[in-house]
Length: 63
Image 1 (cartoon, helix red, strand yellow):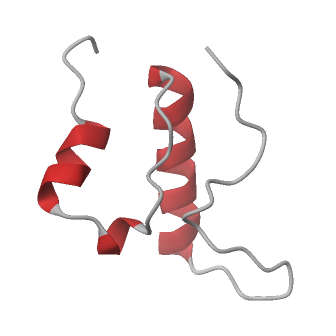
Image 2 (cartoon, rainbow, N blue to C red):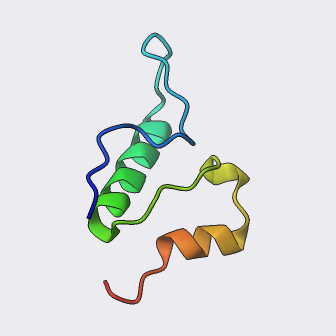
Image 3 (cartoon, rainbow, N blue to C red):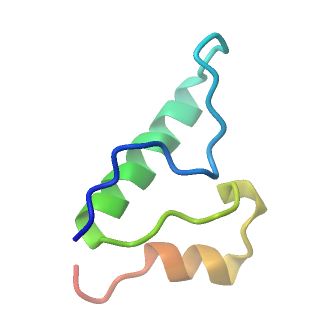
């Protein structure tokens, strides 16, 4: 399983920009899920994904 050490490309990051709590939670959840399942993070921002794309990323029969 590859180890991702950088932020998913779908989540824009600027060190000087304020990071709302919801965005921090999103980054934490996506990163944890990527590490737990070995999946690749979605290429688009989560708000731009279709319901099918969201299900494909989050649903996992093995866990």
